[in-house]
Length: 154
Length: 154
DNA sequence: TATTGTTATACTCTATAACTATA
DNA sequence: TATAGTTATAGAGTATAACAATA
Image 1: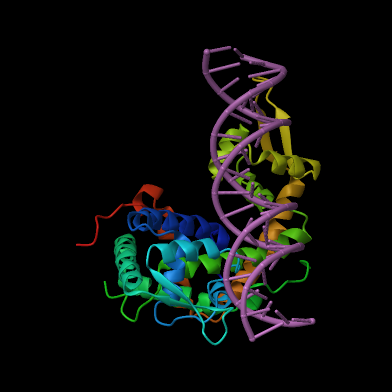
Image 2: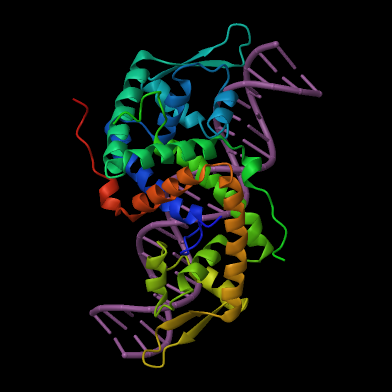
Protein backbone atom coordinates (compact mmCIF):
# COMPACT_ATOMS: atom_id res chain seq x y z
CA UNK A 1 0.00 0.00 0.00
CA UNK A 2 2.44 2.62 -1.11
CA UNK A 3 0.03 4.48 -3.33
CA UNK A 4 -0.16 7.33 -0.90
CA UNK A 5 3.47 8.25 -1.05
CA UNK A 6 3.83 11.66 -2.57
CA UNK A 7 0.64 12.81 -0.89
CA UNK A 8 -2.21 12.10 -3.25
CA UNK A 9 -5.61 13.47 -2.39
CA UNK A 10 -8.66 11.44 -1.46
CA UNK A 11 -10.18 9.52 -4.31
CA UNK A 12 -13.51 11.26 -3.95
CA UNK A 13 -11.84 14.67 -3.92
CA UNK A 14 -10.11 13.89 -7.19
CA UNK A 15 -12.96 12.13 -8.90
CA UNK A 16 -15.85 14.39 -8.02
CA UNK A 17 -14.74 17.42 -10.09
CA UNK A 18 -13.92 15.00 -12.87
CA UNK A 19 -17.42 13.55 -12.84
CA UNK A 20 -18.90 17.02 -12.65
CA UNK A 21 -16.98 17.98 -15.77
CA UNK A 22 -18.06 14.82 -17.56
CA UNK A 23 -21.67 15.65 -16.74
CA UNK A 24 -21.21 19.23 -17.87
CA UNK A 25 -19.95 17.84 -21.17
CA UNK A 26 -23.08 15.73 -21.56
CA UNK A 27 -25.56 18.52 -20.95
CA UNK A 28 -25.23 20.35 -24.30
CA UNK A 29 -25.53 17.02 -26.12
CA UNK A 30 -28.68 16.15 -24.19
CA UNK A 31 -30.10 19.63 -24.72
CA UNK A 32 -29.49 19.37 -28.47
CA UNK A 33 -31.63 16.25 -28.50
CA UNK A 34 -34.29 17.66 -26.19
CA UNK A 35 -33.72 15.12 -23.41
CA UNK A 36 -33.00 15.77 -19.75
CA UNK A 37 -30.30 13.93 -17.81
CA UNK A 38 -32.88 11.87 -15.95
CA UNK A 39 -34.68 11.24 -19.23
CA UNK A 40 -31.47 9.86 -20.69
CA UNK A 41 -30.96 7.66 -17.63
CA UNK A 42 -34.47 6.30 -18.04
CA UNK A 43 -33.97 5.61 -21.75
CA UNK A 44 -30.77 3.73 -20.92
CA UNK A 45 -32.57 1.65 -18.32
CA UNK A 46 -35.49 0.81 -20.61
CA UNK A 47 -33.41 0.02 -23.68
CA UNK A 48 -32.81 -3.69 -23.74
CA UNK A 49 -35.57 -4.66 -21.38
CA UNK A 50 -38.89 -3.03 -20.52
CA UNK A 51 -40.04 -2.63 -16.92
CA UNK A 52 -43.27 -3.66 -15.35
CA UNK A 53 -43.69 -0.91 -12.75
CA UNK A 54 -42.45 2.61 -12.27
CA UNK A 55 -41.25 1.74 -8.80
CA UNK A 56 -39.03 -0.98 -10.23
CA UNK A 57 -37.60 1.47 -12.74
CA UNK A 58 -36.98 4.04 -10.02
CA UNK A 59 -35.11 1.52 -7.94
CA UNK A 60 -33.11 0.33 -10.93
CA UNK A 61 -31.75 3.80 -11.57
CA UNK A 62 -31.34 4.73 -7.91
CA UNK A 63 -34.08 7.33 -7.85
CA UNK A 64 -37.22 7.93 -5.84
CA UNK A 65 -40.47 6.75 -7.42
CA UNK A 66 -41.94 10.24 -7.02
CA UNK A 67 -38.93 11.83 -8.66
CA UNK A 68 -39.22 10.22 -12.07
CA UNK A 69 -42.88 10.96 -12.74
CA UNK A 70 -42.25 14.31 -14.40
CA UNK A 71 -39.47 12.73 -16.44
CA UNK A 72 -41.76 9.92 -17.60
CA UNK A 73 -44.42 12.48 -18.55
CA UNK A 74 -41.92 14.36 -20.71
CA UNK A 75 -40.58 11.21 -22.36
CA UNK A 76 -44.10 10.02 -23.09
CA UNK A 77 -45.16 13.39 -24.54
CA UNK A 78 -42.06 13.32 -26.74
CA UNK A 79 -42.96 9.82 -27.95
CA UNK A 80 -39.77 8.28 -26.58
CA UNK A 81 -41.44 5.83 -24.21
CA UNK A 82 -44.84 4.16 -23.90
CA UNK A 83 -46.74 3.90 -20.64
CA UNK A 84 -49.61 1.48 -21.01
CA UNK A 85 -51.87 0.29 -18.21
CA UNK A 86 -51.50 -3.40 -17.47
CA UNK A 87 -54.79 -5.20 -18.30
CA UNK A 88 -54.07 -7.76 -15.58
CA UNK A 89 -53.56 -5.16 -12.86
CA UNK A 90 -54.84 -1.77 -13.81
CA UNK A 91 -52.76 -0.06 -11.11
CA UNK A 92 -49.45 -0.69 -12.85
CA UNK A 93 -48.15 1.05 -15.97
CA UNK A 94 -46.05 -1.07 -18.29
CA UNK A 95 -43.00 0.88 -19.44
CA UNK A 96 -41.29 0.41 -22.79
CA UNK A 97 -38.97 2.45 -24.96
CA UNK A 98 -40.19 3.32 -28.47
CA UNK A 99 -38.23 3.03 -31.71
CA UNK A 100 -37.80 6.80 -31.66
CA UNK A 101 -36.61 6.65 -28.07
CA UNK A 102 -34.05 4.05 -29.03
CA UNK A 103 -32.87 6.24 -31.89
CA UNK A 104 -32.47 9.29 -29.66
CA UNK A 105 -30.65 7.28 -27.02
CA UNK A 106 -28.19 5.88 -29.54
CA UNK A 107 -27.56 9.29 -31.11
CA UNK A 108 -26.89 10.88 -27.71
CA UNK A 109 -24.66 8.02 -26.61
CA UNK A 110 -22.64 8.13 -29.83
CA UNK A 111 -21.81 11.79 -29.23
CA UNK A 112 -20.99 11.23 -25.57
CA UNK A 113 -18.72 8.33 -26.40
CA UNK A 114 -16.99 10.32 -29.13
CA UNK A 115 -16.27 13.05 -26.60
CA UNK A 116 -14.98 10.54 -24.04
CA UNK A 117 -12.73 9.01 -26.65
CA UNK A 118 -11.35 12.45 -27.38
CA UNK A 119 -10.64 13.05 -23.69
CA UNK A 120 -8.94 9.69 -23.32
CA UNK A 121 -7.02 9.96 -26.59
CA UNK A 122 -3.89 11.20 -24.85
CA UNK A 123 -3.85 8.29 -22.42
CA UNK A 124 -1.81 5.19 -23.36
CA UNK A 125 -4.05 2.33 -24.41
CA UNK A 126 -2.88 0.03 -21.62
CA UNK A 127 -3.64 2.64 -18.97
CA UNK A 128 -7.02 3.30 -20.55
CA UNK A 129 -7.98 -0.34 -20.36
CA UNK A 130 -6.73 -0.68 -16.80
CA UNK A 131 -8.64 2.45 -15.84
CA UNK A 132 -11.89 1.06 -17.23
CA UNK A 133 -11.27 -2.27 -15.50
CA UNK A 134 -10.87 -0.57 -12.13
CA UNK A 135 -13.89 1.67 -12.66
CA UNK A 136 -15.95 -1.39 -13.50
CA UNK A 137 -14.61 -3.30 -10.50
CA UNK A 138 -15.36 -0.47 -8.08
CA UNK A 139 -18.78 0.07 -9.66
CA UNK A 140 -19.58 -3.56 -9.05
CA UNK A 141 -19.03 -3.27 -5.30
CA UNK A 142 -22.26 -2.98 -3.30
CA UNK A 143 -22.65 0.10 -1.16
CA UNK A 144 -22.16 -1.89 2.05
CA UNK A 145 -18.67 -2.70 0.88
CA UNK A 146 -17.78 0.98 0.62
CA UNK A 147 -19.07 2.10 3.98
CA UNK A 148 -17.11 0.01 6.41
CA UNK A 149 -17.03 2.25 9.45
CA UNK A 150 -13.49 1.98 10.76
CA UNK A 151 -12.63 2.25 14.43
CA UNK A 152 -11.01 5.46 15.70
CA UNK A 153 -7.33 5.85 14.90
CA UNK A 154 -5.28 4.06 17.51
CA UNK B 1 -10.92 3.54 -30.18
CA UNK B 2 -12.28 0.11 -29.54
CA UNK B 3 -13.05 0.64 -25.88
CA UNK B 4 -16.75 0.72 -26.56
CA UNK B 5 -16.99 -2.79 -27.90
CA UNK B 6 -19.07 -4.84 -25.55
CA UNK B 7 -21.32 -1.89 -24.85
CA UNK B 8 -19.86 -0.11 -21.86
CA UNK B 9 -21.87 2.64 -20.28
CA UNK B 10 -20.98 6.32 -20.25
CA UNK B 11 -18.09 7.21 -18.02
CA UNK B 12 -20.18 9.61 -15.96
CA UNK B 13 -22.90 7.00 -15.51
CA UNK B 14 -20.37 4.54 -14.14
CA UNK B 15 -18.35 6.96 -12.08
CA UNK B 16 -21.08 8.98 -10.43
CA UNK B 17 -22.49 6.19 -8.23
CA UNK B 18 -18.93 5.24 -7.43
CA UNK B 19 -18.12 8.75 -6.22
CA UNK B 20 -21.37 8.87 -4.30
CA UNK B 21 -20.38 5.70 -2.50
CA UNK B 22 -16.92 7.01 -1.76
CA UNK B 23 -18.47 10.13 -0.25
CA UNK B 24 -20.92 8.04 1.75
CA UNK B 25 -17.92 6.16 3.12
CA UNK B 26 -16.29 9.41 4.22
CA UNK B 27 -19.30 10.78 6.06
CA UNK B 28 -19.13 8.55 9.17
CA UNK B 29 -15.40 9.26 9.46
CA UNK B 30 -16.01 12.99 9.26
CA UNK B 31 -18.88 12.77 11.73
CA UNK B 32 -16.71 10.87 14.19
CA UNK B 33 -14.27 13.77 14.14
CA UNK B 34 -16.96 16.44 14.25
CA UNK B 35 -16.12 17.94 10.87
CA UNK B 36 -18.45 18.55 7.92
CA UNK B 37 -17.51 17.66 4.35
CA UNK B 38 -16.99 21.32 3.47
CA UNK B 39 -15.01 21.76 6.68
CA UNK B 40 -12.71 18.95 5.62
CA UNK B 41 -12.30 20.49 2.18
CA UNK B 42 -11.37 23.80 3.80
CA UNK B 43 -8.85 22.15 6.12
CA UNK B 44 -7.28 20.44 3.13
CA UNK B 45 -7.03 23.73 1.28
CA UNK B 46 -5.51 25.60 4.23
CA UNK B 47 -3.05 22.90 5.21
CA UNK B 48 0.23 23.71 3.54
CA UNK B 49 -0.46 27.34 2.79
CA UNK B 50 -2.71 29.91 4.45
CA UNK B 51 -5.01 32.15 2.44
CA UNK B 52 -5.32 35.89 2.54
CA UNK B 53 -9.02 36.27 1.80
CA UNK B 54 -12.12 34.14 2.13
CA UNK B 55 -12.98 34.84 -1.49
CA UNK B 56 -9.65 33.34 -2.57
CA UNK B 57 -10.30 30.27 -0.46
CA UNK B 58 -13.79 29.91 -1.90
CA UNK B 59 -12.45 30.06 -5.43
CA UNK B 60 -9.67 27.61 -4.62
CA UNK B 61 -12.15 24.96 -3.52
CA UNK B 62 -14.73 25.73 -6.20
CA UNK B 63 -17.33 27.15 -3.85
CA UNK B 64 -19.24 30.39 -3.53
CA UNK B 65 -17.87 32.91 -1.05
CA UNK B 66 -21.24 33.05 0.70
CA UNK B 67 -21.38 29.29 0.98
CA UNK B 68 -18.33 28.77 3.15
CA UNK B 69 -19.07 31.33 5.86
CA UNK B 70 -21.01 28.96 8.09
CA UNK B 71 -18.29 26.38 7.60
CA UNK B 72 -15.59 28.86 8.62
CA UNK B 73 -17.62 29.82 11.70
CA UNK B 74 -17.84 26.19 12.77
CA UNK B 75 -14.15 25.51 12.14
CA UNK B 76 -13.20 28.63 14.08
CA UNK B 77 -15.48 27.77 17.00
CA UNK B 78 -13.92 24.30 17.08
CA UNK B 79 -10.44 25.84 17.14
CA UNK B 80 -9.42 24.23 13.85
CA UNK B 81 -8.72 27.44 11.96
CA UNK B 82 -7.88 31.03 12.85
CA UNK B 83 -9.55 34.01 11.25
CA UNK B 84 -7.62 37.17 12.13
CA UNK B 85 -8.34 40.62 10.70
CA UNK B 86 -5.50 41.92 8.55
CA UNK B 87 -3.97 45.00 10.24
CA UNK B 88 -3.10 46.44 6.82
CA UNK B 89 -6.65 46.14 5.50
CA UNK B 90 -9.18 45.54 8.19
CA UNK B 91 -11.75 44.27 5.69
CA UNK B 92 -9.91 41.05 5.01
CA UNK B 93 -9.62 38.07 7.35
CA UNK B 94 -6.38 36.14 7.22
CA UNK B 95 -7.09 32.41 7.24
CA UNK B 96 -4.80 29.80 8.73
CA UNK B 97 -5.16 26.26 9.96
CA UNK B 98 -4.27 25.59 13.62
CA UNK B 99 -2.15 22.75 14.99
CA UNK B 100 -5.34 21.07 16.15
CA UNK B 101 -6.88 21.54 12.72
CA UNK B 102 -3.86 19.90 11.16
CA UNK B 103 -4.14 17.03 13.59
CA UNK B 104 -7.82 16.47 12.81
CA UNK B 105 -7.23 16.67 9.08
CA UNK B 106 -4.45 14.09 9.21
CA UNK B 107 -6.51 11.75 11.39
CA UNK B 108 -9.49 11.95 9.05
CA UNK B 109 -7.35 11.50 5.98
CA UNK B 110 -5.59 8.49 7.44
CA UNK B 111 -8.91 6.72 7.97
CA UNK B 112 -10.17 7.66 4.53
CA UNK B 113 -7.00 6.41 2.90
CA UNK B 114 -7.12 3.20 4.87
CA UNK B 115 -10.63 2.60 3.60
CA UNK B 116 -9.64 3.38 0.02
CA UNK B 117 -6.73 0.98 0.29
CA UNK B 118 -9.14 -1.68 1.49
CA UNK B 119 -11.43 -1.07 -1.50
CA UNK B 120 -8.52 -1.20 -3.94
CA UNK B 121 -6.90 -4.20 -2.28
CA UNK B 122 -8.46 -6.63 -4.74
CA UNK B 123 -7.17 -4.72 -7.76
CA UNK B 124 -3.81 -5.75 -9.24
CA UNK B 125 -1.10 -3.25 -8.39
CA UNK B 126 -0.38 -2.37 -12.02
CA UNK B 127 -4.05 -1.61 -12.65
CA UNK B 128 -4.23 0.44 -9.48
CA UNK B 129 -1.35 2.61 -10.53
CA UNK B 130 -2.68 3.03 -14.05
CA UNK B 131 -6.06 3.95 -12.63
CA UNK B 132 -4.57 6.68 -10.46
CA UNK B 133 -2.51 7.96 -13.39
CA UNK B 134 -5.61 8.33 -15.56
CA UNK B 135 -7.63 9.93 -12.77
CA UNK B 136 -4.83 12.42 -12.27
CA UNK B 137 -4.55 13.09 -16.00
CA UNK B 138 -8.28 13.68 -16.40
CA UNK B 139 -8.35 15.83 -13.26
CA UNK B 140 -5.65 18.00 -14.74
CA UNK B 141 -7.74 18.85 -17.80
CA UNK B 142 -9.38 22.29 -17.63
CA UNK B 143 -13.15 22.36 -17.88
CA UNK B 144 -13.02 23.88 -21.36
CA UNK B 145 -11.32 20.73 -22.53
CA UNK B 146 -14.22 18.58 -21.37
CA UNK B 147 -17.04 20.57 -22.85
CA UNK B 148 -16.23 20.53 -26.52
CA UNK B 149 -19.68 20.77 -28.08
CA UNK B 150 -19.60 18.30 -30.94
CA UNK B 151 -21.56 18.74 -34.13
CA UNK B 152 -24.65 16.61 -34.67
CA UNK B 153 -23.96 13.03 -35.64
CA UNK B 154 -23.45 12.84 -39.37
C1' DT C 1 -55.88 -3.78 4.29
C1' DA C 2 -52.07 -3.41 0.91
C1' DT C 3 -50.12 -1.56 -3.34
C1' DT C 4 -49.37 1.54 -7.71
C1' DG C 5 -49.12 5.75 -9.18
C1' DT C 6 -49.83 10.58 -8.18
C1' DT C 7 -49.95 15.04 -5.86
C1' DA C 8 -48.77 18.15 -1.98
C1' DT C 9 -45.71 19.63 1.51
C1' DA C 10 -41.33 20.38 3.66
C1' DC C 11 -36.49 20.37 3.78
C1' DT C 12 -31.68 20.91 2.00
C1' DC C 13 -28.48 22.93 -0.84
C1' DT C 14 -27.07 26.48 -3.67
C1' DA C 15 -27.17 30.91 -6.12
C1' DT C 16 -28.39 35.89 -6.34
C1' DA C 17 -29.13 40.12 -4.34
C1' DA C 18 -28.93 43.42 -0.72
C1' DC C 19 -26.35 45.23 3.26
C1' DT C 20 -22.04 46.75 6.52
C1' DA C 21 -17.64 48.16 7.19
C1' DT C 22 -13.70 49.46 5.54
C1' DA C 23 -10.77 51.49 1.86
C1' DT D 1 -16.69 54.29 -5.81
C1' DA D 2 -15.06 49.92 -5.01
C1' DT D 3 -14.07 45.70 -2.28
C1' DA D 4 -14.29 41.88 1.74
C1' DG D 5 -17.25 39.87 4.36
C1' DT D 6 -21.93 39.05 5.90
C1' DT D 7 -26.89 38.42 5.88
C1' DA D 8 -31.38 37.82 3.54
C1' DT D 9 -34.10 36.18 -0.12
C1' DA D 10 -35.25 33.08 -3.77
C1' DG D 11 -34.71 29.06 -6.57
C1' DA D 12 -33.68 24.06 -7.82
C1' DG D 13 -33.58 19.42 -6.35
C1' DT D 14 -34.88 16.01 -3.35
C1' DA D 15 -37.30 13.50 0.34
C1' DT D 16 -41.51 12.64 3.18
C1' DA D 17 -46.28 12.48 3.74
C1' DA D 18 -50.91 12.38 2.22
C1' DC D 19 -54.16 10.92 -1.45
C1' DA D 20 -57.00 8.29 -5.20
C1' DA D 21 -57.55 4.12 -7.72
C1' DT D 22 -57.31 -0.68 -7.79
C1' DA D 23 -56.45 -5.12 -5.88
